[in-house]
Length: 401
Ligand SMILES: Cc1ncc(COP(=O)(O)O)c(C=O)c1O
Image (cartoon, rainbow, N blue to C red; front, side):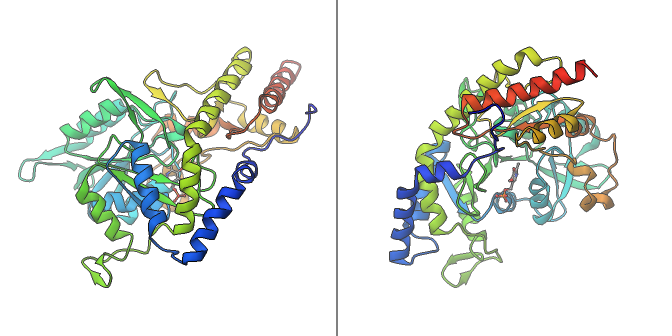
């Protein structure tokens, strides 16, 4: 590779090319039966993904957003409840909370891992909530509504610090729904349980997205709920299918939120490669860490907690000169992204809630400084060297300014 070959932010063409014959064969199989909705591919995928996540049940749905919405509703979140999450996420996290009928409340992130800071959650619950002795629920003092759930987001492939979050949830009677949309296969070492836990197996339920760019991506839309709770799984399965318990018997009003057979068949094939792809991402992260180490005065590398095994959905560096670095890399042919440039509490969509700049300083600082470098299974060490060389050139250009 020459020194100025282009490095894409993500390459979704090559892995599909490598699996082409298997993927086409499964599509042909589905075409031959014309069983496009439900059926053996969906059931097979649900069984295999449940095993992968170390849970009893998986319910395939049509997106990560619906997975979150159905999981919240099936876990008992009702209109008028308050659900706590972080403002440093993709807006789908809060859309799902609103669509479940609940009010959103935020706590800030830990500035090094970018995931929910359990101390901030504790402070929120201790100061902003009060016990209603008649119901035994904790009430959001300002909103006058019960706080019933918390949604930690396992961002960039790294799980949130789940032990203290689970402890607080138990103490304050909150349901925990993991947003695992960026964390297929990620792990967390629970000191309480003295073992590694898989993303999707810790809370009451979890939501996964199979948007094409995810570590496990469909060739279209897809999502899943994982849980050990049989009733929650059954309720989620009804919600995704117009509230049916059996054909044309609608016990509740639901949604059209099914995972289709073509996507399920494709996901089954790709799932067999997920552990290997995640290892490739971890190896690539290590290479970046080494290459960028000498540049630590210019860019901050991602921090992997000692309690986490990240699957590096994204490799996110940080610098106060983020916009300049991004432009420099774009000009050099290196693709980058910003995940996410506007904190959710400052999005126009939530202007009526009255959140303002300064409310969640760790999130706001991150949004101004983070930059996602190219990261995907199949990224080569040569490509990574080029990215690091370009970052180094950027740092050197500052020194001579
Ligand atoms: C953290 C997070 N939550 C939720 C979602 C929503 O998933 P989907 O796009 O499949 O609806 C995404 C996907 O981008 C995500 O990254």
